[in-house]
Length: 427
Ligand SMILES: *Cc1c(COP(=O)(O)O)cnc(C)c1O
Image 1: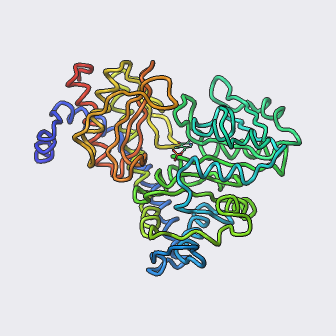
Image 2 (image 1 turned 60 degrees about the horizontal axis):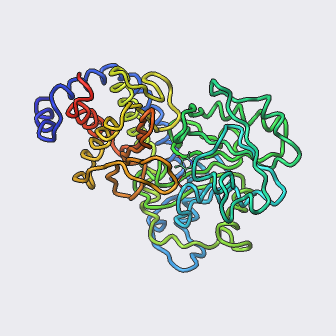
Image 3 (image 1 turned 45 degrees about the vertical axis):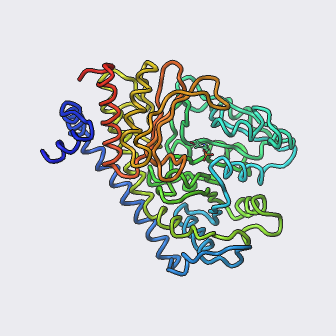
């Protein structure tokens, strides 16, 4: 591949970095083949759902105003429901992000006096204000919903005894976050989540379970809804939007739960009947169609990065060999300079804003400076190659995404190149 190497050199990748990358890749054939098999299964699952629901050009027609009898929207929701094997789904551009989808799911199904339990420790940052763990106007706490939490055991496993004690007659809803997000705990597999749900329901059969599925969609052949979750929730600018959805969120679940979510999102009595599609249907359908292979590309990028950086002495979470249940990769770079160099590489390899230079800066809600690299078609999209992290020990960069494996590979090679150029790594 002389030709490729020459082109890469004009883009700033040295022969040494390229060769180091190729060596790492040689050992990854089986891993990549396994990722492709999951993608093939999920692709067929999505296709079958689109065929069964007779997706047609009429589904792509834009609607405005109330959006009554919106064929594209209603069909898309049936496609999602079939892929997630649920009775119903709410998939809307009016759901502005993942946090919004989770907020709708929680506030629609919790009433004053009810208790919410997280058996997997502290939830994702933005949910803390939603729940009222950090005080906020309009939090669930303000509406009289009590929050309880059972932390994971030191080895990252579920504290079944603690959970048994925490579940009581008032426990209405249990929230389980699949991905580690920006924490250091492990991400849970679908089957681990299934075990936890079965345990909780054995103690209280009528308790509702919601799974925050962000970053987990299509990484496995099963979703949390296949193992007992009453609601499975996520963002369309992550995995299921396939990089094409410009906005949106989804809630897949039982008819009873999803109908309540629709009432909460629009208005009691209106529910799913309103909500025009605003001309976004083509990107939501096509994005969902692409999502299995896009997710596979992002996962390959994450595996590649761990196998590039771990042998150089940088701790990677997940590590180079362990199994994966989401697309996030953390690399502990050990210094601020390392984080800057890594992010510069990701930025330089992006299709958009490649000329920008990321640098650490203050961010609302964070006590440390934060650095972010992203050159995305959809602003803030984290299914596109992106990296960020707070400037504090262990100086970990969290990165995720990559719409195509080849672009993810180039971004990761470029990150290593910038580390080499800065004298932080020698190959
Ligand atoms: C991204 C994410 C969210 C919130 O999604 P936004 O779209 O950023 O609001 C919630 N939970 C987890 C685990 C996430 O990764």
